[in-house]
Length: 80
Image 1: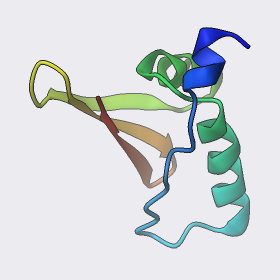
Image 2: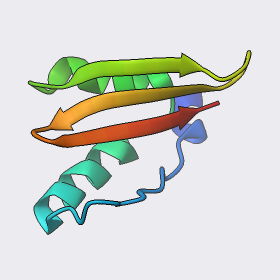
Image 3: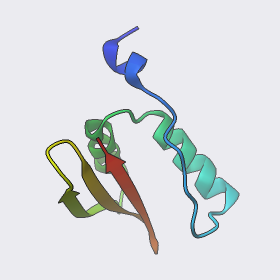
C-alpha cells in the first residue's frame, strides 16, 4: 500500500442544502479519493465548471478552502 493510500480516510459530508441522492453519491465517490489538498486540486482539474472561490489561512497549519462545485452548490474544506 502506498503512503498516500494509507493516509486516506472518509471525509464527512455536512449537507446543509439537501443534495439529491445522485449528487450525494457523486460527492461521496469523489471524497473517497481525497486525502490531501493536492487530491482536491487534481479533482478540480478533472471536473468541468469547478472553481476555487476562496482560500483562507487560519494559522500555519490550517486552511479553509471554498470551491464552486455545481450550479449553485459550493464545497467548503477545512484542511489541516
